[in-house]
Image 1: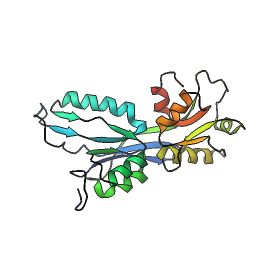
Image 2 (image 1 turned 45 degrees about the vertical axis):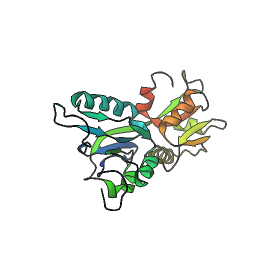
Image 3 (image 1 turned 45 degrees about the horizontal axis):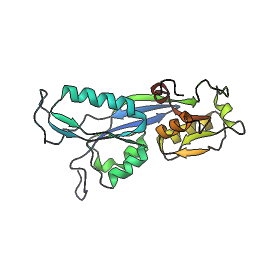
Image 4 (image 1 turned 60 degrees about the vertical axis):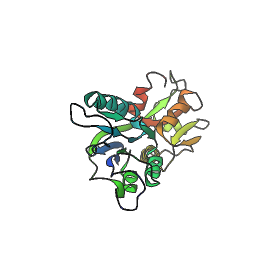
Length: 215
């Protein structure tokens, strides 16, 4: 950690997702050695691991954390903090402790550059998809369908990676719309559609897949 920082106890390992054309690419660095507090594991690692990750990574990072702990039983993986990348970056700069930060874009990774131990590295990719209610009752199949008057469409807030990507995609396709609401992460957008509080939302394809028929 840099002098003058309150927390975390050491520099963060950084992972991020950067927008490339209409796709989203993610990057990461090797996980920093966990804090030493627990007994040794077969791998020789011990301690606790605190992870901050973009909401879009909920399913994958939950699985990865379980696999990591199984291979390194001496390391306690604390419950992962999932939220919008911008929100997490703010928390980190305000002193929230973490060993790993998984951001959904480069802009928010840059916000915590003083805390990062080494350069971020590409580790995954994602693309946007329209999430609709089960059965697609309104027959929404293209971006232009979202702009039909009366349609309740939810997007991530523009300062969030999912919101910035959604607006770039709409602009690229020449579609103009006013969202019914702007949410702080993709999970919140998906929840609005699941609860039928919105007709559609722009989220990542992995979120639609993880919803398992709920949208």
